[in-house]
Image 1 (cartoon, rainbow, N blue to C red):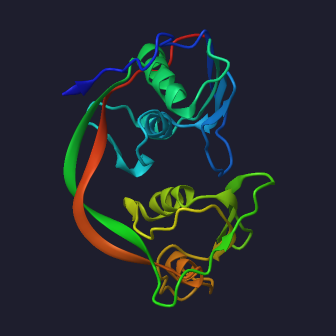
Image 2 (cartoon, one colour):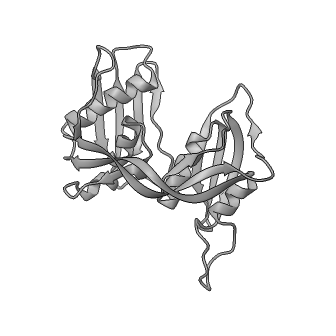
Image 3 (spheres, one colour):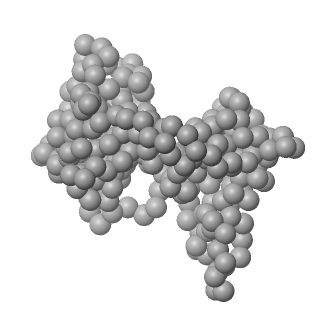
Length: 240
């Protein structure tokens, strides 16, 4: 059954919204839904990523239906919008984003449940090595490519939601947080490969799984029911 954007409060759409195609694409970066009072923005986000933010679901669980255009997971857009509520919450912003996607992209999606391979993130046998963050300071969750082809994930004052979403993006599989850890943490995680690379010319270095182990955590592959969202229809956005 197709999903229509819901209205959680009377002001059910942005007062003003700009959606612009990013020329040439952006370098690898973390995409975030930024909410500041009545302002909402997304920098260089694909439609698939925007759907994930709007419906609070990991991007990897946003599927492209047979009629979904390829650009939905390729073209990147900058979104800047203003709401009529000066105290806009993230949940309210997500509802407005649903309406924006339906209006500008003619988006139609369908929710369902599928049995999928997945990873569970758990605490390792020797306990978590994560360091609790202080009460002040900037928040950051940035995966950065290294010159040698590896990646470094820098996390400041963040819970584990960002970590599991980042792992899901790299592995291509859904990830469930089953650590029971509810705090905010500061840590850095570096890895050369996502999976073990046995080729002769492969650069040496830890895999993503080994990097997770160093945090006192562990990824366990399982299988189970997962809620997914399928993009049934989308069109290039209408003019601002």
